[in-house]
Length: 192
Image 1 (cartoon, rainbow, N blue to C red):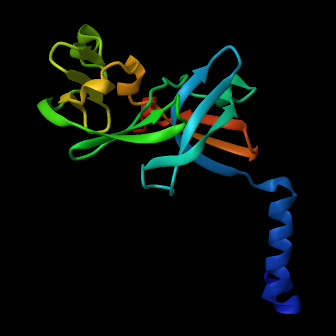
Image 2: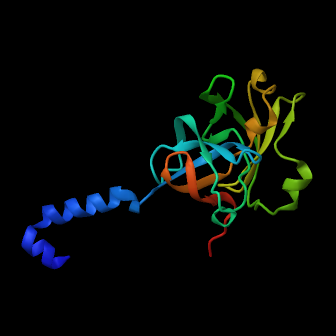
Image 3: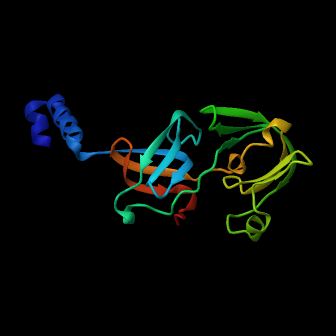
């Protein structure tokens, strides 16, 4: 390669590398939050990350990705949910009916920290839990490892339970859009 650079110049070498990359050598990686998973069809629907590394999932429309044909190229199946983000006093959900991301104001009622995914309270309480009488939703935030009890406007209490559940973060590698060659469930993979 260095001989080529000396003889033909860096532009020729760069052009050769671009041609080699576009001829099918390299693929791309994207990451998103699973809002739906159809195991029978082998398709996961994702809201993609707006910029790599930001953990802000807000790219619309949602994309459907076929899982890898080789089951060894896929980690644990993704759990789906419509909750995308919990911020200070507001949260973002994917509204399926309207096909858009909706921001909902909330008031924090209670917060319990240091709750890990294998904590018995999560299974025992069956989160998310909607309490129509009190006008509250109790949910789990895996990123902050907190159980939150929040008060939301009454019209949101009728939304399905998966509205208040975070979908798993999924990273996938592909060469053809919509067809994953490898897929990793970031939320359920422990890297140590």
